[in-house]
Image 1 (spheres, rainbow, N blue to C red):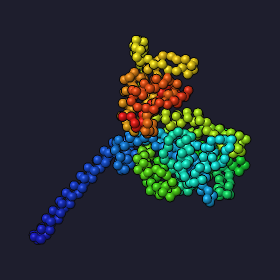
Image 2: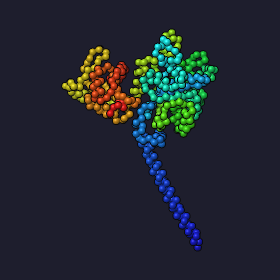
Image 3: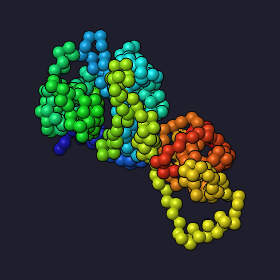
Amino acid sequence: MKNKNDIKNKKKKTKKHKKLKKILLVISLILLIFGGVFAYKVHLNGGGLAGMLATVVGHDQNTKKNLGEFRALILGISTDQVGVELTDTIMVASYNPNTQKATLLSIPRDTYTGKNTARATAYEKINALYGRKHRPDETLEAVNELTGLNIEYYVVVKTEALIKLVDAIGGVTFNVPIDMDYDDDGQDLHIHLKAGEQKLDGDKAEQVVRFRHNNDMTSFPSEYGDNDIGRMRTQRDFIMQVIKQLAKPENIFKIGEILEIAKEDLITNVDINVAKDYIPYAVEFDTENLLTATLPGTVPSLKSTNGVSIYVVNKNEAKELIEEIFHNRDIVETENETSNNSEAENSKTENNTTSNNITANNTTSQTQQTINKSDIKLEVLNGSGENSSLQKVVKQLEGAGYKVTRTGTTNTTSKTTIADKKGIKETYLKNIKDVIGVGVISSSESSSSKVDITIVIGADYK
């Protein structure tokens, strides 16, 4: 027969086991609920790695929708010479998390920022601005003047940061375009690389992005772009490969090491909260959506520039390029095609209705012709920061008889603008302003524009 104490002890153990099971069951249910809620939030945030990271940092399904295009000036600084910091790389970078499109625009380091090229000095080159006072905001101001982009952020990347970053992510596979053989004892810069695809460590990465020409003054082939033009192309191509490497799963977990590198060797005015908003979505960026270009311009003869080698930006070409790669990338063509019967019916109605008629300038013949509102191609871009503004404006314009052929999003702006692209008469522009109730009228004529008027909705639209 079992001892009474043994029976009591067995009952106590049984009770303890039951309590433990209940506790474990409650914990499991709590974890299941929290896990389910987390998984649901990840799903709402788009799923995948981006959705998970967005959920971890506290985003909801509306966070990404409210994010505009992020733009920043990137300055690559070499620090080989004591007391001298040269700006070897000047780029404008943009990224739109909603369209997953990005742009890199290179600005030649010899770009002239002065007023009179006949009296040019080396101190007026854009690459000299940072070195004078170590103030990136001066270079930022000059770039905004050249591009009209109103960029707010800057990132100054020192040579040490590039070397450490490439080593931290395990090197970068890159196709070196030509044999490179260059030595500069003054900067302690020695570049010796063979052409072809290879894995570059941090030291070799620095060699690739700083190469302009060989010791014998030969450079990249003309079709690639020699000297500075070739170097800028190589820099953009290399950055694309760095982005691909960074996006690999094994490097996501090196974020702590990467942030430490940034803390030591980056100078930036990008707030941590701003970075936190964009990083979760950037991990799924596809470099196929990266558009690259160089600010267009010419190199005048030394005789005309006070003996100083400078690069003069072509303002007209630059304006068209900026419009195409920064503003027009996110524009979506809307379906405004009608059947032949509808067109005939509309035409009949238009002929009987004079209130919708408007006079516009004919820029080729210098005469005027009477056209209908629906004949004018309108482009509406939302820069208000409010998703609902775009639909409201389009509805107002179409309700007044206008035809909107293109819509899209653009960088957030405070003022609504109505830009004339094709020499439309001012009475028409004022009429549009009356319809939407706000707007600054401006002229921005462009023969290559696909629309007649571009309306950018600002934060002042209510």
